[in-house]
Length: 357
Image 1 (cartoon, rainbow, N blue to C red):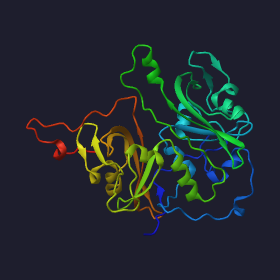
Image 2 (cartoon, rainbow, N blue to C red):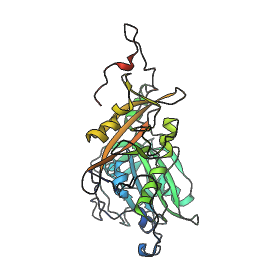
Image 3 (cartoon, rainbow, N blue to C red):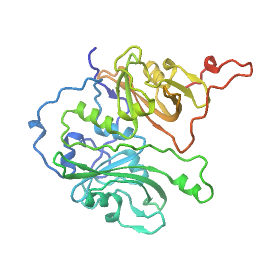
Image 4 (cartoon, rainbow, N blue to C red):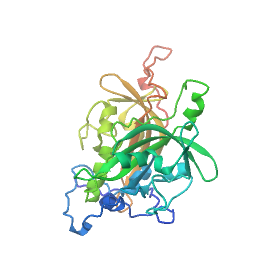
């Protein structure tokens, strides 16, 4: 079956020098934006497309879909190379890309969790750039220009070239303000979304072809990602998706449609058949899904509560060509409880009416 050139309906903002988001930040020039100038892209050898579905998404399109804030700085000066819309939202401002006065972080001011001031040159990103060490699960307080503050949990990793030299640093972070506020009064019975970041995206500046760039980035994302074509066949999945499913589905197979999970359940305890899950609704009905809770059951019987975000994908003519699902587990909020309850008459709920998803 021919590859589908897919593009999204939702176009990302563009990062510009005056703080407005612009196009032009892509993996092929990642080394340039991080300060490692290489030979021009015209001299690069073409790379054949991957076997999975061809997705015509820019790096900016993709990073704006990640359900957490993200940005990168270049080496050695720490100047901001790119950031996504969620990062700008948490910062409360849009720093200019490549501005030498915007280094290590785009926030207005920063503080340690105990309230003491944190200079930009002392941030975890600056430390990773100087030492080459990764820093995960560190809390930082961001102050916005209007004075409001938000506590975030950061995951910082250096980016290295093929020779092992540091060419920049990435920071994936998310809002934990609610959790911090509750910790002073309770032990937090229900906490915010926790993305299990077991593998940090290492942006390889040697990526040349746009399809290879996208495939590599999706594979290394800390969130689970998979795509389906217009018929619902699974065309791509990354390692984190396999970990949450507990199995590895077959690509482009008629018996592996809409999701790679063994079984799915609604958060209310109803069995979700594969052709009635949120991904099926996106593929068959052109529907967007935001922050839906779905319980995944692995072949072993272990169940994981996940937060699901799905967007339809379109070909160059604007026709629906499939969908992309970015989903994460919610380990600290609540464990998936047994969902196969019995009706009062003792009948299984497998055939009970399905919720609208």
